[in-house]
Image (cartoon, rainbow, N blue to C red):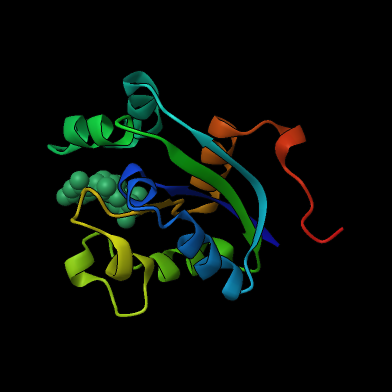
Length: 141
Ligand code: UDP
Ligand code: MG
């Protein structure tokens, strides 16, 4: 069993597709073990995306991620880090395969509906960024 961090980004929250995106995960057998809606400050968005601080899109991305509420979730399942990345689709919705969340719900390469951790190390860090141990629940009891 593996865990990963998923974020429903401000564009998708604003489009009122939170439920549809959660349904996408649940239909694929992924379980939600933590979830909350938060609004990040610019500073929190900068800290979350620190790995991208030298990228040309960093300032715009962190403005966007702090522009409205997001839904942060911890997803659990077998191989869920990679599975979530596949369900999300490519970063740029123009390249995203049909049937992926980004193909269906993203606006553009920045406003691309969802975030997903990309490795076990980043999953661990990103989960700890938003959740404490007591907020991580078992979904099967
Ligand atoms: N992003 C952007 N322009 C780009 C590449 C990425 O605005 O050219 C944004 C986009 O919201 C993306 C986030 O920065 O989801 C993080 O980029 P990353 O390369 O890690 O893509 P992801 O892992 O989200 O697919
Ligand atoms: Mg990434």
